[in-house]
Image (spheres, helix red, strand yellow):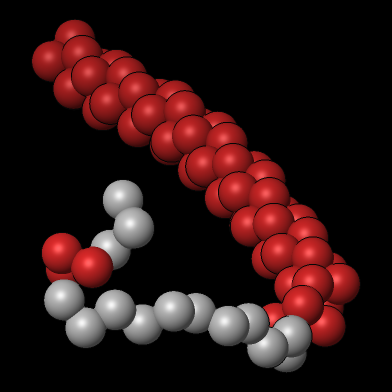
Amino acid sequence: MIGPIKKLMNEWRKVKQAAEDYETLSDSVDDLDTRVFELESMITRVQVEYKNEYEEDNELSHTPIQLTIYEYIDELPF
């Protein structure tokens, strides 16, 4: 009679350990989900900031500039 009880207790311990492992894994997944959300938010903020800065500087990007073209390297002024 003790043999089947020991087997049941061992199975119960395995199930309990599996449940604890699942809970730990679930917490880890939740932490990862939170971190991914934080990183996505940071990326979005950077994209918005870049877009806003680009739109502010957009007028400058259409300003013509004059560059001197040198035919040979030894003609460079430095």
